[in-house]
Amino acid sequence: MTSKQKPQAETPSLDAAALAQLYANIAEKSGELLNQYMARGAKGMPAFNDELGIAKAFYETWQRMLADPMRIADMQMKLWQDYTTLWQQSMLKMLGQDAAAVAEPDKSDRRFRHEDWQDNFLFDHVKQSYLIAARHLHQSMGGVEGLDDQTAKKVDFYTRQYIDAMSPANFLMTNPEALRETVNSGGQNLVKGLHNLLEDLSNSDGGQLRVRMTDTGAFRLGENIGASKGKVVFQNDIMQLIQYAPLTDKVHATPLLIIPPWINKYYILDLRENNSFVRWAVEQGQTVFVVSWVNPDGKLAHKRFDDYLTEGSLTALDVIENITGEKQTNVIGYCLGGTLLAATLALLNAKKQQRVRSATFFVTMIDFERPGELEVFIDEQQVSALEKKMEQRGYLEGSEMATTFNMLRANDLIWSFVVSNYLMGKDPFPFDLLYWNGDSTRMPAAMHSFYLRNLYLKNLLCKPNGVTLAGTPIDVTDIKTPAYFISTAEDHIAPWPSTYAGAQLLQGPVRFVLGGSGHIAGIINPPAANKYGYWTHDKLPAKSADWLAAAKQHPGSWWTDWGKWVAGHAGAPVAARKPGSKRYPVLEDAPGSYVRQRVE
Image 1 (tube, one colour):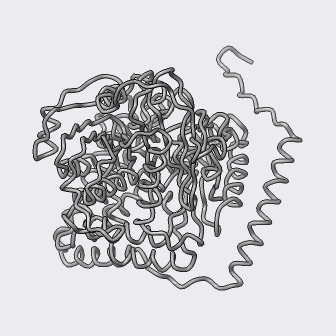
Image 2 (tube, rainbow, N blue to C red; image 1 turned 180 degrees about the vertical axis):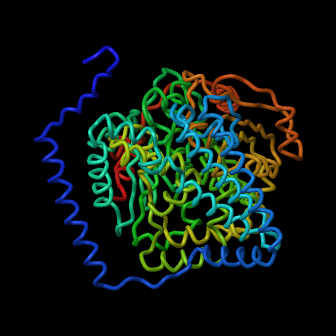
Image 3 (cartoon, helix red, strand yellow; image 1 turned 30 degrees about the vertical axis):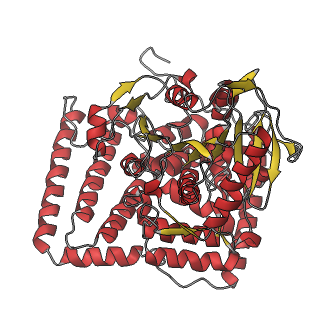
């Protein structure tokens, strides 16, 4: 070999036995899936049914677009000009000259972070071609005049879903990182990726693919996740009540109740020791109680929103009063749990009962006029179709709600895992938050229907006497309980301007705080992490933009701010309390049996 000759790249060594076993597993799973598919096919394919109204929305959009040929011509001309510029710039770059990009991804877009997307002429051209097409398609479909608001939002949302799905990062031949891995591994990544795909298909319901986001085998409830020491001190049909063991000799007199959403499991607030809000609150001298909602089946189809109030929040207050001897409790409500908390306060207020000393709302909407992108999934047609499905089985399947939430952040929660699992052939990484995200729960048909119709569709909760619960008309605008609202700047489920509107409804003293990040990461933000920061402002002006303009930014976690605030409503120190009482003896160890009921 001469000095000018480059050494030949060595072919990666292959473990023949391991590869043969992998092929055997693939063949076996493929056969099983083929048999399942044939069995379903024998029953006949269902007729097309536009339950979500997507086809109707796009049909109307295309009709209006075709009625304006001059606009179509203008859009085509602008697209052609951008592509012409791209070709010119690409030729300059191919010749070694500097050339400004025609289209750049957003700084938060992680799909194009591999160096070849910038340094390689071909892949840079592919990336920019995609971004140009995506931009023009989005602008074209989003700029059609004459559509009603709901149709326009639906078209915009599903256009973005299509654009995200067609990203060159999602395909082997246009993903430089996947191609490099294919060469370096001798194609083993593709074989392993096919194995992962078949594994996910075999574990999915009805053949609908459920992409694994994390290594579920790495977590064990009560051991390395949801492991804070406590006892179940009460249970009924819809919830278990957990009381946590103290970590201090003295505790605040006023106990603390946490009401999580029943869309997911409560242990989002008790993941690992270093990011557990529950453990941190106990360390601050709080006597912490947490509601753990049941994962309902068809037997609980009749349970209503009223039942979650009377058998959930109100019953929890009764049990806590008996165990601690305190007539008032500080209460936290997270997301939908916060909406239930607002309804509970309004009902107590209507009955002249002062049982809640302070209320904290985690990313909670009370006014649903602007519910964000979830609005795309909620109109009369879609709610009616959903009600028909729920009537058949008595509940909303948890995986269906999980898919909806994942679509709101498709690149992060769907396509990034498709690339990693199937193109790169990687096994999912163990991540506690994603484990929790996949541990979805069902929702009773009657409750979910009431919630969608009266809160989302009609927005009645914020109207005086707009909703009647447990036989009593309620008025959230008459609530005088001191309240703390924590919302997050990047929340795609409960947009902070909407939660801000809800905070303005209450009559008592309100502290509104805005944290960084999103619906989950912005809340599960322990002080030790020193991330994101938060904004505060002592006043509550009419417009959320005015609040933000005058707000002061602070480093670190909002937990410390809330800790100081709630301490002012927590009473004098008393001796630490052990879980349970004579009337409510310990039933089992935390995290309890309800939280272990998984939807597979």
